[in-house]
Length: 80
Image 1 (cartoon, one colour):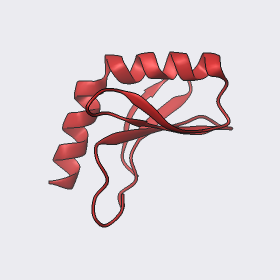
Image 2: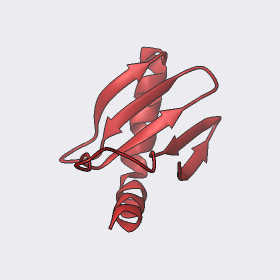
Image 3: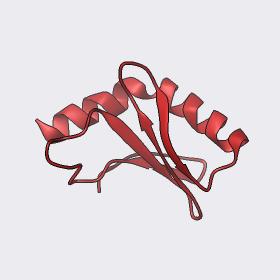
């Protein structure tokens, strides 16, 4: 489970086994009590939320948009 970035108690990561066939580019976000998944293409979209408040999701979406290039490069570097 490569962790790509940590910000304010949030870990941004993807799982080493993302399915067969490989799912489209996305990033998971975890805190001590919640987890979410965001698609990175064609634009940042919430795929799943398990425990984050709407305020936290808005904050997380901002981080994902801000670091989208980093996440996409890490995704392709790991899975290519």
